[in-house]
Amino acid sequence: MPLDTFPETVAIADKLMPLSGVGIGQIVTIREVRTGISEPEGGDIGLRLLELGFVEGESLRVIAHGFPGREPIAVRIGNTTFALRRFEADHVLVTAAPQSGTKP
Figure (tube, helix red, strand yellow):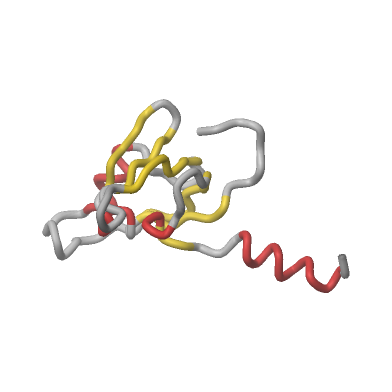
């Protein structure tokens, strides 16, 4: 592999994406939880997610999507499973988790 392609690979791995775009079985790391008033609910969804344990640096695994429409999204953090609506999952920005032998 040429050395000049390595920085591009790192950039792709570090790309932020919303949790709602993660596929089933993927393990990701939380990089940011967006806080502020949410239009659909009128409250601070990001703050609620932080209180539940969606904190920066935490790994999680997407375990299922609802049918139809991929909603809700079931995620597991540690031994706890959460079901999030798509607009809630959009408040959580993630990156691909480093490869390891353990599952969250």
